[in-house]
Length: 199
Image (cartoon, rainbow, N blue to C red):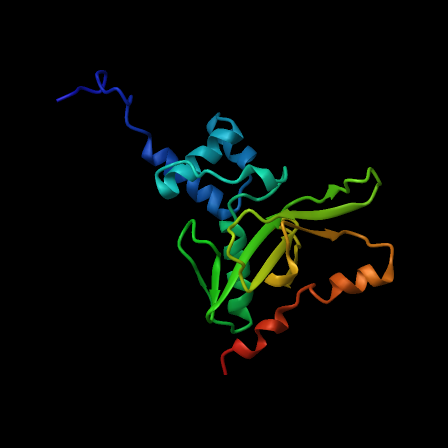
């Protein structure tokens, strides 16, 4: 039997610290804030959270990954579940690493979130919320895009799955009325779930 010093895999991980880190992350604390509390980098916090969930590091398709994306949307799922629950809509979270996030009475719903908008690709001063679609080749029935910090006021856009391609961008302050109308119809569009509301 190997002693701790002989163990080729090194000492056992600090499970108490891991549990604290995961709890803070699921509560919605930022990776950098958690890292500062424990004296580790934000990247290390992310590794600990990912490893604790499924026992290995998730390999994501990096081709469509946009800097600033919320890679793990568990806090966002909790936020959206709360909203749906208050509206009387029956929904449940899917297991970790499932190809969509929520089951809303049989509808597959994928949640994406960003805390900050980014500058448009054309070097203009316009800002937009840009989301990458890295989840799966299978298309959910709806996407819910959560824009803004969950601890403050955030806006949700509920978009049918067939309207979303490899990425989806929402302008912060669109200049043209037609563009504004295009996105306004998705803004807080919870009425799509109205037929599913409990009687």
